[in-house]
Length: 135
Length: 146
Image (cartoon, rainbow over all chains, first blue to last red; front, side):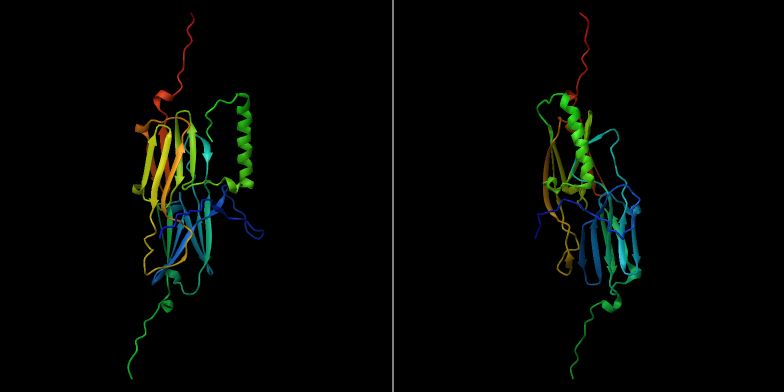
């Protein structure tokens, strides 16, 4: 089933009163993310175009996993921006993890502007098949 | 967007000022109604010698992108594949990213040299560099004293 609708506006991170301020001048967007659950892991796939693996910061604090991606804007030298439909900015998103995730083995990879986070499920959370014995 | 008729030079400065003010206020009050009508969103950088069009297409393979330049029209089409994790055994908890075919045409302000068009794809950002067609470049005409 292909979904033809693609939302175009990037959602921006809105700062609330209790938040700390950012020191970078560019805007901060919330990257779109898909969450898939496989048998033994949960995968988060997020769109972060323009970012390579050196500029992504993934931290896990208490139960909150935060993705922070900083971009280096590529501005063609000697050109003037005539027409802009999108803005370039940093990406930030947080997720709350449950106890079912094995914290030690979380892996992340970036390819072509897509970040994949592999969150393996902890042993206790794996579905166990229970065999039925006769008698 | 790109005007085909001539506007008096008096208005150039006003237009420029208007655009600058619009851009300034966009930062604080983004106008959602002016959202791009199609995917992908394009940014166009220009100077007198050429154009540079950038698009954010994360997750699209370079071989799935078709770029066609005819005269002064750029057509960008392609396909964003559904994620390889989508199969019968996986469950989807959240889907925010779209996928499917996309096509977008853009009218350029001047014709470009099709032979010299170059496209690069880096970290999910596509950049198409199009130098201006030689015949279209303004020529300096020397005034000779008779």
